[in-house]
Amino acid sequence: GQSLEQPSEVTAVEGAIVQINCTYQTSGFYGLSWYQQHDGGAPTFLSYNALDGLEETGRFSSFLSRSDSYGYLLLQELQMKDSASYFCAVRSLVRDNYGQNFVFGPGTRLSVLP
Amino acid sequence: DAGVTQSPTHLIKTRGQQVTLRCSPKSGHDTVSWYQQALGQGPQFIFQYYEEEERQRGNFPDRFSGHQFPNYSSELNVNALLLGDSALYLCASSLGTGDHEQYFGPGTRLTVT
Image (tube, rainbow over all chains, first blue to last red; front, side, top):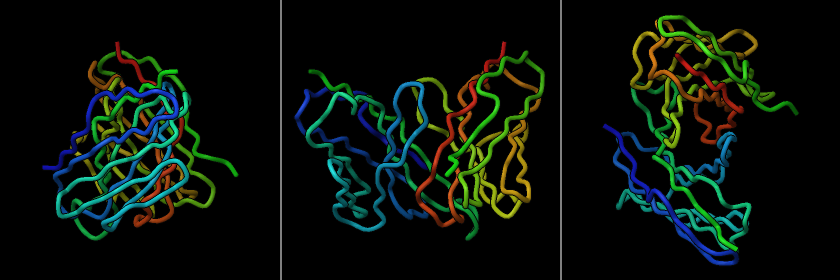
């Protein structure tokens, strides 16, 4: 089967740096995505790693190690508005070469304190 | 540029009934995926539609079915509703089945009583 693990909760203060880890077990791995979801809102895409290494997008960075089946999301200069749930998601093929299947992790609830 | 839209926003149904949820993808997108999200959990992949065909399917029973229309919009149908089907149903669109970036709609909150 396919499974992802993330910490359930993380708390940090404004201006700090926080890292949210994700480990996965899946077949046909094509990449790791990160999504942000505020309470009552829709998930929004943050970043994607298909290859090993670090991808940087503004205050957010994402890292992938395919050999370790591990990735993380790094949030810098935390702001109150960053309080939300963060999901890692593995993109994989389930049946054949058509279509793709996104398996989401359980989510990490980030609370940013003043 | 219109984003992903879903209707209705909220829905209350009785156990055993059937429900149809609708989704219009982001302008220019041709692929639609459906997800079920229970409270406090991550979205669970139901299925993906491309070129009016179901291309991938998650671990959901046949009570969950879908359709994609020539204009790329999509419907999710759930038959014989169970209390456990109560959840937020999210639609996500992308450009082609190889696109890793998905745009999510606001979701339909389904409550089964």
